[in-house]
Amino acid sequence: MGVDNLVLKTYDEVSLHNNPKDCWVIINAKAYNVTNFLNDHPGGEEVLLAAAGKDASEEFEEAGHGSAARLMLDEFYVGEIDPSTKINATLDTTSSTNFLEKHNKIDYYQGKSSRQNNIEEIKNLSKLPQNTKYDNKSPKK
Image 1 (cartoon, one colour):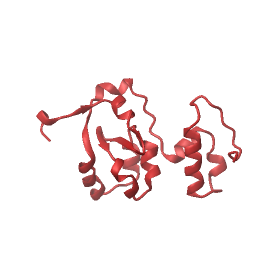
Image 2: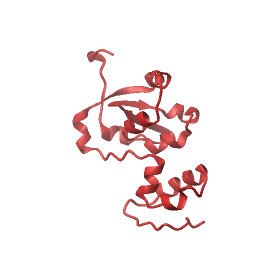
Image 3: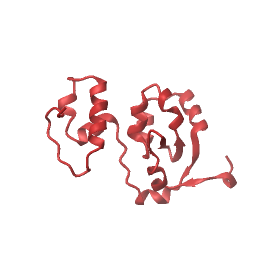
Image 4: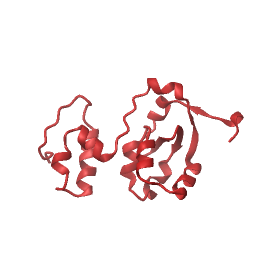
């Protein structure tokens, strides 16, 4: 892509695309609209949704994506990220494990539950206000 065709996106702009019907992620300073890939992602849609609207560079690299996955990114590319906008962004790159640790739930789930329970807990916790305190007890049904 030539400099003349460069489309700059801001972190704040990407953060607005954070749901199953409109899901963007940032990987290595590039924005990708992965909405149409949610159902096809080998790790499950919840992996992408946990990173929706955020910088997922670290998670992408840690997952060990190969050259095929990197080539696939081209089809979802929407623009370069303007690095000067990072200061204004609320960046909270969160894997499902980090999310549960952040909300003090990892002790309950670690080694005691299935992947589905973790997904349900993430869905429940993401609906709560950010300043809510959590205990390490089982979620109420």
